[in-house]
Length: 61
Image 1 (cartoon, one colour):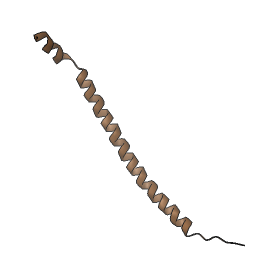
Image 2 (spheres, rainbow, N blue to C red):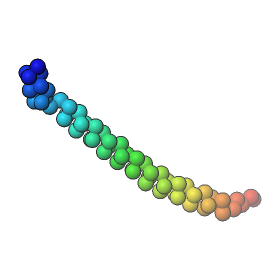
Image 3 (tube, one colour):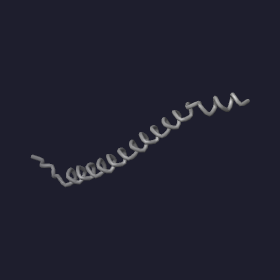
Image 4 (tube, one colour):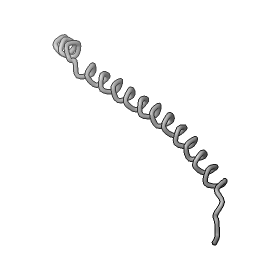
């Protein structure tokens, strides 16, 4: 039984898993931040284009 606990204490596989979870969470968080920033800018640009197109007149000859 003592050998089992020594082996368990020296095992580092769990630490690697924690590292990957932290890295994955950071990447997901960064992706969400980028999408929200780009989404806001895209909405504002779309509104500007819509306003400009709505204010144009069509000349019929």
